[in-house]
View 1: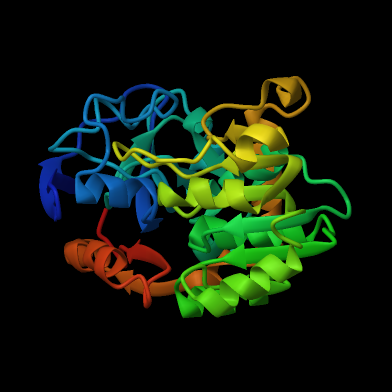
View 2: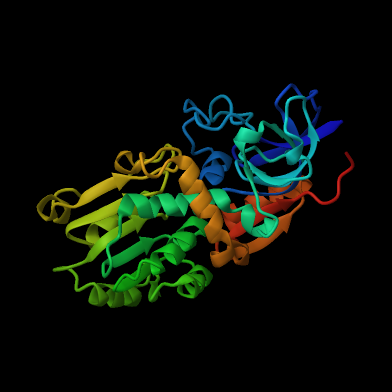
Length: 344
């Protein structure tokens, strides 16, 4: 049996290659892919050649081996059905729909403990965004918003919008968002933002400053999710005395230039890094990864992230998908690969 898989071959280029699938070893199962989602943050950094090439692909995901250097297999959100079992695997798993943290490919091999069992009631088009939902849950855990806080989310890409949707459920007194792309601002208000602003528009920025009573007050909590190094400096300008900034963006090998000499220095602003592969130490005893992932899974039916899909491509059209995300952010939001009917 042959497997087709996506390979990042260099900056701005991807290719689909083919290989023979190895035989299953004891404890493994074969998953026939139905869809996989592009991570518009990490994968675009890899696609653009902006990821640190000496950094491990991911120390917590078995299927991601080696460093972030070319050629590279990547991706971590694949939904499919188990079509074959190795020895010592419980027959329960046969024909189960699962999510695998696996690079883009039409077949994946994994052990049951490495996949997420999906309830048949969960729409697979929602399930493919489970890792993104877990990331949004992690941001809220790290930010610990309080009832009545004034909250700002910078960046309304896929994860930014999911974060906005979850923040609305915490009942902040004001929930504001920033994004230069008009249709993302429209989606932001649909997902729960009270107001969505264009940070590059002087009039919008004046309205934002009025809402936050700047420069004297500001937001209690700010999430920097834009993926742009300039976003961190912007977050500092928007955050009040003793406020908190959650940096969920990964800038790759780009440097962030921030002003630490004025508002930051006197306002005791706390900057917190947040990344989903680890847990906030203070919560780890009560919220292990399994609980957090299960909670995120339960949110899928409520939030319905499939609404955010703007483009679907076959794996053979992968170059179009990455080009769309890279060059047309005003059109592309969530992009998935669909694998269709395959012969096993």
